[in-house]
Length: 286
Ligand code: C5P
Ligand code: MG
Image (cartoon, rainbow, N blue to C red; front, top):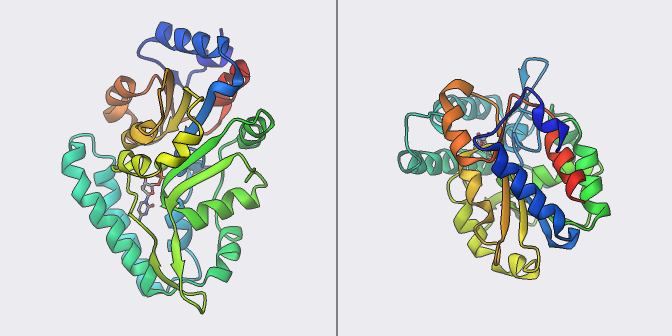
């Protein structure tokens, strides 16, 4: 049906079910679709030329806005907690308090650095942030067809917005739920706003934003894109959902995590740095 679904990076627990979901969605009008996507390592690349690409947090961590001492501390946190994030032997319940610990410690360090709002633009420009290949078609096509795209990220909202702005794809159909910085009157970071979003409370984040989903209540067909098992709850606020197609990027620790990803996502894209498959599905649906 969609030739890209035969790409070597594509794995599906039940290809027939995927076909059925796509067929059902395709028969409905484009006005019934909404897309909900994670940001870091879903819309952005995991690696390029064998080198890891930064998350929105890492863009700050590696920047000129952070002292050498603080950089070392942030790196220690990454080295401690990232292996826990991707550890397939621990349950989400075990990981949750540790993830809260990671985010809280990292945000405290960032606030201590009194990051300047007016320098964020430079920092993003100077970073190695990279959206996945094919991002332009993805964003532009959704905009052309007036399909809402919700970017739901446990990263840093101000940074990720700047990434998509600089890529020229921050179109009016894009809405972001994320952790936003709060600056004082001199433009220095003083705190993070609102409830913390980490990888395991996206469901709570979704339920806090009922207004957004209320506006989209006629859009009962959902395309969900993520790279973490925590991303699966991003659509929990959607009203009267009829069909959902879940596409998951499996970037790291592939062998250990493949079974759990296959059980959770309808389509698993293994070490696939492109938007080729989501784009092919989107073109088929519209
Ligand atoms: O956009 P997304 O929800 O994927 O952002 C979360 C990602 O940010 C996590 O997968 C985690 O690896 C990363 N992270 C980070 N530095 C932190 C906290 C989280 O790079 N301090
Ligand atoms: Mg992610």
